[in-house]
Image 1 (cartoon, rainbow, N blue to C red):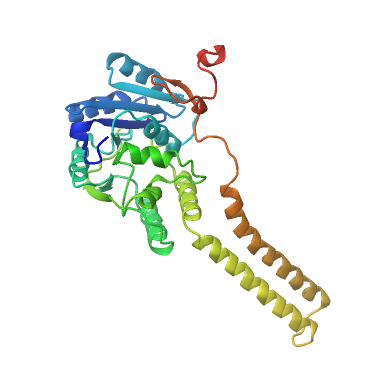
Image 2 (cartoon, one colour):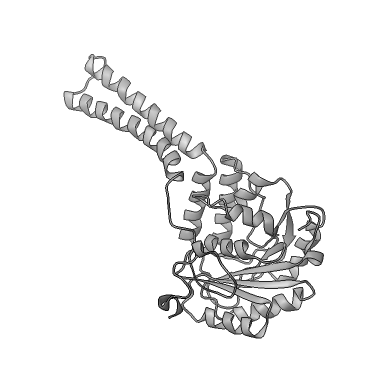
Length: 323
């Protein structure tokens, strides 16, 4: 792919991650094809272990339109895994990420495509009129404030999953196989040629959101711990300071400078030892945990396109896989 190529002359893969979106899939397909049908288009659906018949709908779409491809997981692996699979196996030089819930109108993709022509490797949509519950909006605002301002993590301001990315860049990020993958925070580590564009947003009209506050909170913690050392450093310093204060207090009690029983002195000494050890453990866990072997981010049970054997749980020719 030429570095100067754009989606309107090189082709576009629309990656659509979905988990139990049976009510939205046909509607989202129709909208994407209607708005982006003039492109050399591929629609790549990633079924994240749906249990509601979503895969059946996707199969029907693939049977009726040869532009539609799909990957189906062996179980639910989560949002990051779903779009990562789509990014890894996208067949066109550019990727447009569109969620199946249709909260981002497909027509807004033209704004991202126009911005990419200025030479950017990634263009992120930013909601101008977010149609989500207040708690979700406040949570996102807090997330960006803590991540960008307090922890100094480089994030495209206000960026969302509605984005246009060069396939080469997206695949490079997925293949890093980070212990704490976070696409928004990884892009700035690889390229400075990214930007944001205001886009429209609308309320979900069918189905329920699968992204709750517990998921968002845990995902945020993964970002804060995985992409900044400030939290672990602060924890280490706090433990060392507390340990030092405990030691000084214990010595003062032992020498009679302050009143206290032998039990209090002993307890303070033990507290000193435990807090010092905790400080060392916090730092070491960050380093050791990142290098531990782990399962792959996702495993594929069924796909309409060739996928790596490493990404399959079972041999597709086996009776278990075919069942």
